[in-house]
Image 1 (cartoon, rainbow, N blue to C red):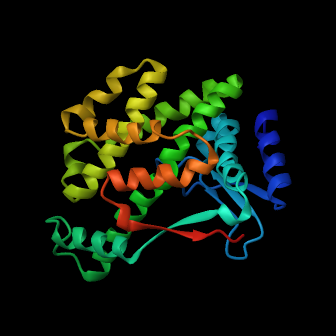
Image 2: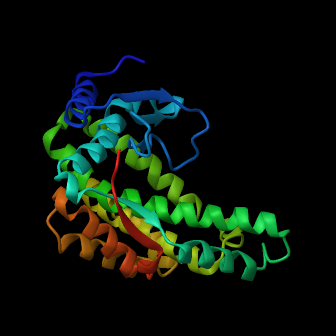
Image 3: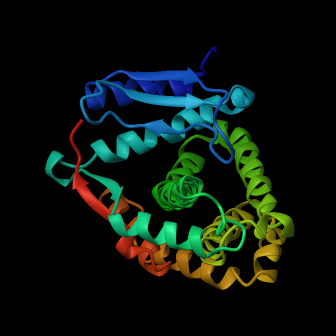
Length: 257
């Protein structure tokens, strides 16, 4: 895949700042809403990895710039201030309790309940890890790189459509009430933010209908209370987790590449 000048610049900067290579590779196994996740070098892995789904090649420059920005924000901090987000045993325990109590999964074999709980846990942790910071990153990219705006908007619209799919009644029946409400709140915040930027105020209507919009606004208010600087990344994630009642799910461990 031929990369544009903006993504090439971000890749070179990430490698120069961190002293580690950034590997970019296609992965057809990525599931929505993941379009291009990043794995920051950690645990002895001597490189950063950016994956992208083959069907997003037209948005690749933008998506690579986003993921490199996560790396650059981490390394913008002094080494002693770099932390990695991990979950606590409480996250696994609460997720499993949801799976065991929900009618759609209560009668499943224990192994399948554990797998379902793992899905609920990792989904919420991924949203906490990416969306609060991602909104700040996207604001910055939109201001500094106007050439990325078309692909940015394309990616945002795709995410809005993916999120809206979870509002279908038949899907709601298969997810426990609490994690579903948490998912809706985060998605409502995303829709509220981008609906304002792109003039799509109707994006929030489905979340108003399911009672999630007020909570979504509260999450955005938590972000607005902070300056969008790398030094505040931990605080904004923690603020969203606390607002959602997930403060006990997360912990911060010193980052070691």
